[in-house]
Length: 454
Ligand code: GLU
Image (cartoon, rainbow, N blue to C red; front, side, top):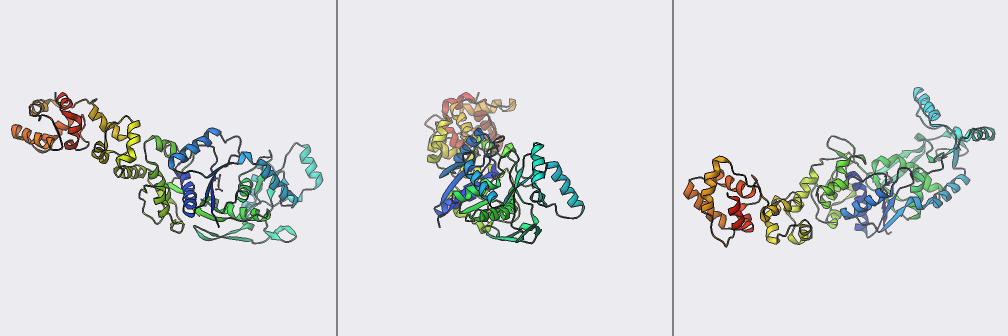
């Protein structure tokens, strides 16, 4: 069987690291199986869905290295949903209800007060033609509910335990009792669709073989299997993964700006650091940065995904990025350095990369070479620095120059250790830390060094 999966975001905001988890579980699974990955925009909510968000999602996925084989939009597929709704109505499985939200709330409260589960009582099925006519005359429009197959053969009001099972590819055997659920509303009173029916119709028509998504959808799955079956469609395999939360247990909402892919990208973090953290947190695999999608795919094992929350520390995006950057070859960063205005060569990159938390940091070290440095010389070091200046070796310079120079300065001034190196470092770079001066000095050159030592 060839695998087809989908990532189905609603374009109502920017995606964050928590959304990357299902996106990658699907994408990596498809890559591993030689399957197809569909990006499906769940944009049936016309009010809240925006093109700019859809475009933003496409850009973010591209930056992460997730390339869809196919892109679909629910807003272009209403005819299919209308057909499915008509089919269900004809079969008597989609029925009109006229309760207002306030009436429903009151009924739920009453049920709770009487110790009953707040399950919808199918009052819509009992309406007489006169009652319907009355509601319509009042200007009420019906919403439409799917009649769950959780009752005896001829009586929808006599509910019986009806277990729906599936073998979840992540969590193993799952069971939902349909008698514990209300008939789901599939169509709102204004005629718009809730997520459920379009998602099922798409999964069926697009040949989705595996639905991999967050565990917040487990209860939906019982309902969805019933609707797949009512439509005579093949039920896909399901997998429900734990959700990413921050260490304090906080969930990630689409609006949690700092962890949006956009802001992580702008902060200079590496896409593979974001991907590795999003995938490996809350699994049996150690959280370490994968260099490539192929490498990450090899680390992914659905059976190793934990059933408890996937807690992560947002600072780890930085730690994983730094690890990746330290291991990058010049060839991997050359283009980026160039576009950052860093003209340093391979030797330069190898000298500074250990001191780069992000690739962008190379720019800071390049500044030391090209000259815009404000030397820092404390009053008590002025005399010392000028003595050192007088001892600065002639060019050509190489990695031995620093040792040769500081040895001479030590001999002349009697200073050693930090008291010797730090004033020179601060004068030459304006900073108290940075790449080894032994390696930096040949790039800076004698003329600029002399300049900064005064
Ligand atoms: N648009 C839905 C969501 O973002 C998709 C859920 C699903 O994968 O079925 O929750």
